[in-house]
Image 1 (cartoon, rainbow, N blue to C red):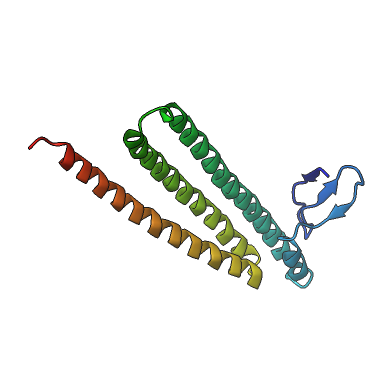
Image 2 (tube, rainbow, N blue to C red; image 1 turned 90 degrees about the vertical axis):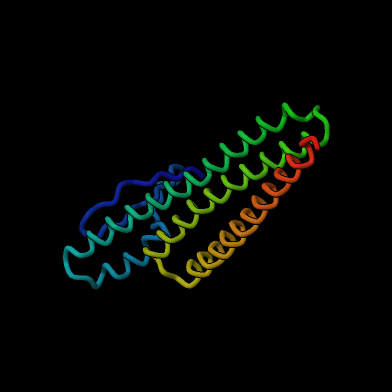
Length: 170
């Protein structure tokens, strides 16, 4: 079912999601808590909260989109660099494959940073226990990914240094 988001209306109106087939309206999950606090709020404060919630929602979408684009571009670049080196001999292929894998790992770490930023934005608007738990899991994953990436970079550098030493005459 295709969904369209309409611009938020001021004066305590929430962004609406309209189903084209049914023309039924529903509130996005991130805006519903702001709507509840809006009913008992000081007049005028509600509009600010709703605009802020809507802006953060769009920023979250943009950060998630950036993360997805980084992953897509990195995978395509890695594939484009890997395919021409398939027919080469094993030792040169392994060296080049390590370089491609490390570059892909760096891009994945960057994409994970974008996803972490999106989750932090979600937590700012709707600080539920589930969202905070998801944020904690992503922080742990990012930390582990960075640790193993750094370790692999050091190992690749030491392998490269050993190869250079072994290839030198005498």
